[in-house]
Image (cartoon, rainbow, N blue to C red; front, side, top):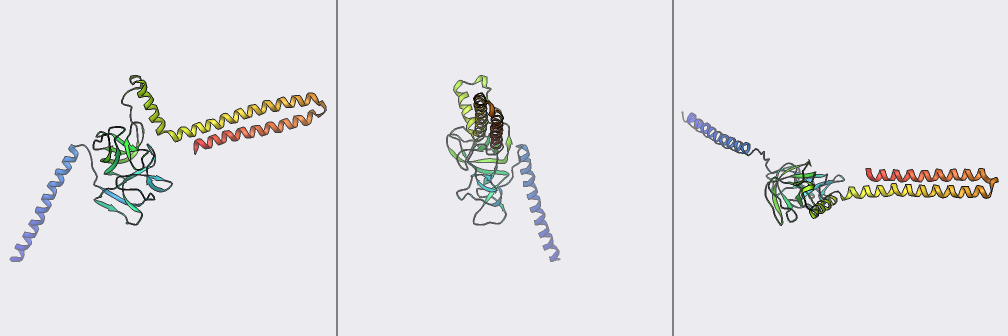
Length: 266
């Protein structure tokens, strides 16, 4: 009889614990769905990081197969964030590994001195290694801010979801002042500086090739005509030399165009 009483008490305790856990679980789920936001716990993956200066809250980017702190605005290779006291860590710890959050809520280093960060703003990388900033233009982001930050650099909660996103300008170009337009152009050039430099370099190669080819062609033609008028008996050899020069000029021009395409596609 005593055995059945003890067994019943154990079963009753377990049932009570299950009931209480279920209440908290459903209450928590109801709260999450009421907020219309699904938050993952701080789950991180232990990964090898080549950047020895990477620390908690730094935005990490994949560079040539290695993980390093992101150091350019709107980095297309944003990977995740170095976790700050993660609840769950998956993977084997090593001397060069750090816990990286690739999805979910995490504390992220953000600079709010240039642009005030408000709740819901997209956060992207910046020129400061590992530090994020408010995203003002379409491009790659690390996620959305869950807190405000103004006039300083600090750690704020961000819903980490690395992806490319489209962000509309707050005001159309027709409604902003001249200096606001200049600032917007400068920020755009800062964001796309590597791509702009590639196109400028490619344009320089193409223009230089055409100018050199045109100049060399006109000079060769002029010298050929002069040579034939001075020595009509050598007309055949002069024409042959002109053809060889023109072929060489064509090859150099095409090489310049090919180099320009290589720079663009690099």
